[in-house]
Image 1 (cartoon, rainbow, N blue to C red):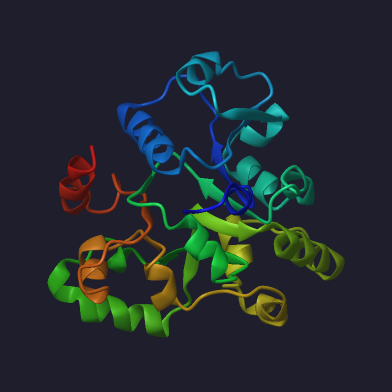
Image 2 (cartoon, rainbow, N blue to C red):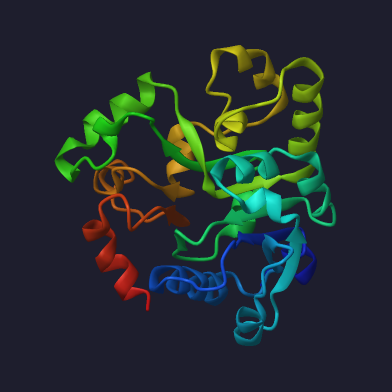
Length: 252
C-alpha cells in the first residue's frame, strides 16, 4: 500500500479557466478524480472565476487562484508556467503533475514515475504535422522521427520536480532573455541556445517518456510500446480520437 506520506509528496494540479466545461473536459476531470483522487488535487484558476459547482461535486479539490491576467490567452498561460512564483505555491510538494483537461489517465502509477527521479517529463511530441496521426503500420517511421528530430515533452500532462524547476528557472533568468513561446519547449530544451541548460534538468529519453504519456500518433506509439498503455495521454480528442475511443470507453 502506498503511504500517505508518499502520496503527499506529489500534488495533481489542474488548470481551469472557465466555469462551463465541455463533455470531454468533464470526462477528463472525472477520470482524474477516479484514478488520482487520493492525492492532493488542486485547481489553478483565475481569481475572479467562480468554481463553486466543481467544488460541490469534488469537495476534496483545493482551489488555488492566480491573477486573471495569466489566463487571458495561451501566451499568458505560458508566462504563468515559467514563473517561479507559480512553483513556489507548491513548495509543500516535491512534484506536481500538471493535468490539463484534455488529458486522461489510465492507471495510478504516479508514485512510480516520481521515483524515477526525472525533473520534467511529458508525452514526446514533434512539431512536424506529418507525424501528428500516423497509423499503426507506420510505427517505425514515427520511432525514427523521434530518434532524429528534436522532441518536445508536452506540458499538458507533465510531471515536474519543484526544486529542480525553480533552480532551472533561476539560472535561465540570470543568463537569458525572457522566454517567449510554449513553456514546455523551455523545459524540453528544444532550442539550440538552451544546450548549456541541459546540465540543470534530468530529462527522460523519448522512449522512456512514452511509458508516461502518448500524444501524437497514438496508434503508431502503441506499436512502439508493444501494446502497453501509458500512465496517461494528452490531446486524445485531437490526435486520432478513433484510436483512443476504445480505451477511454472501456475505462468508464
